[in-house]
Length: 197
Image 1: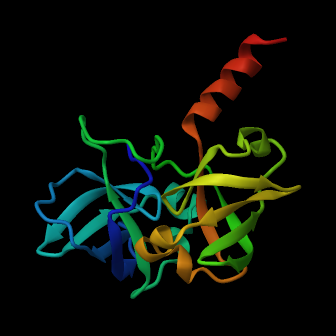
Image 2: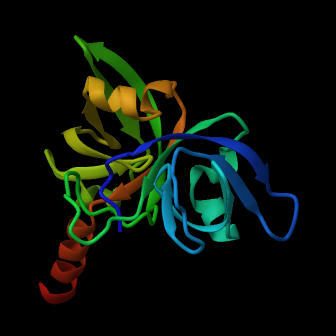
Image 3: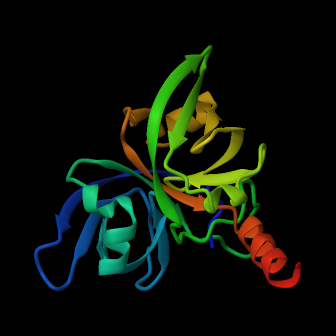
């Protein structure tokens, strides 16, 4: 479980998708990593399978490679990193599982003073039921508030702190991002469709 509050950006140093064991190697500022712990990488919950000094490795399943932006990762690319939530820690964002629901595409980004408004598209009609104005969403693992809803997507407003702390400021038009819808919204929708006529 994560919060969507990014600790820092790491950097991909190696992507190995040419063997039966697909692996991702990343540099980070994390210390005292443990084998088997979970780290969200651009919002994707992955397991640390090896580490040495400031580098750690995660195995990538075929399903994860297909359903997320992992297939676009390249050496040198900055990625958002967050370690799993510890009991007793502050929950400043929202509950994020690290299980990506789908990807979306950045249509446009525009400056609004010191802020940046980003518009994303590619949300299915069914998934739009999970979006609520001023509700929560995770984009590349970053906990954000839905600003406006559109026919095929939504917009969010990024504050300077988020722009400085994450890799979202590096996005260009048509870039693809990982999307995780609010877990509470998913539970409520599932329950309402199951129990209400």
